[in-house]
Length: 364
Image 1 (cartoon, rainbow, N blue to C red):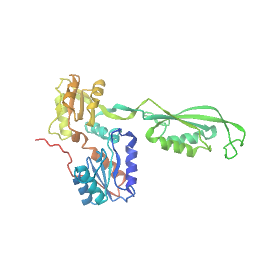
Image 2 (cartoon, rainbow, N blue to C red; image 1 turned 90 degrees about the vertical axis):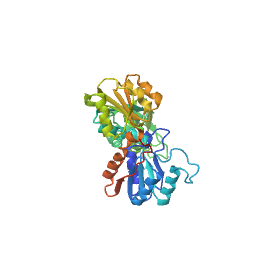
Image 3 (cartoon, rainbow, N blue to C red; image 1 turned 45 degrees about the vertical axis):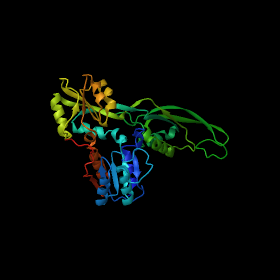
Image 4 (cartoon, rainbow, N blue to C red; image 1 turned 30 degrees about the vertical axis):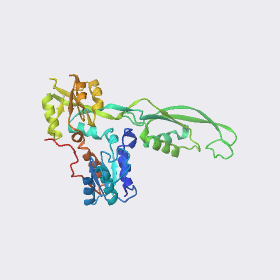
């Protein structure tokens, strides 16, 4: 077992294509071909966390926040980032981050918040756009079922709660092979007409290369004709923030007290209470102020996130309660996501949660 076996599995959970353009998820430090000794899950990477991994004999750190966000022009140990990189290289420890790509998936950061709050009917607050494509393949009728199945098995054809979705039409394809070809049907130099099925399927971009690879592998033609079309459809299975509902409405103060208990908070920064009961809750782990308008648009009673600026609280306009519970506090349970997923898939290796409290903010 090597480091890349773990990173490949993490990218099945949270594909790197889901990360925001500003992000820097993926393998940041280390050799992917190194044999795996053990894994340390953490929210942040600091020099203390690297020392902890070394002390415990672990050589892969999996974090939510990327240690390296922007380019490093010098690595001389002047900042905590430089110090952590130096230590990781010194100890032969790899560092991997799954950040906004983990925020964006079902089962990720926001799903965990919804689970902790006991919410039902969870949906993404802002579904991702531009993530879907349509793949159209032209296949001899006799091989259509085999090729279609190969595409489905590779991840094509999923729409909401349905899979194996496709549209099929029959027609006639024509081709003429040259003298160097080895045609499936027909003869070199002659125009051949072949009864074909046009198979249309929806595919996530993250799965596109695999779908095309399996389609070509199962296809009988020497040269496979297929099209890939970008789609403007939003994709409800991936997105930013989430919204869900309580089974029974409760008072605003009782709900805020529950939030304090669940997230072990000393305080909550929030807008004035409105006097309504809380039923629909919108939320986003980390810095989620950019979704305040979306939370209002879906008529949520409260929006929970972190890093809300002073003037952004005014955007509530008595339509919603905005509750800032803190960046670290809203993402602290991300470590559990890593831990549970990795332990399940690598039960023979040590998978540990970091014991270092990395929150740089203290409350006095």
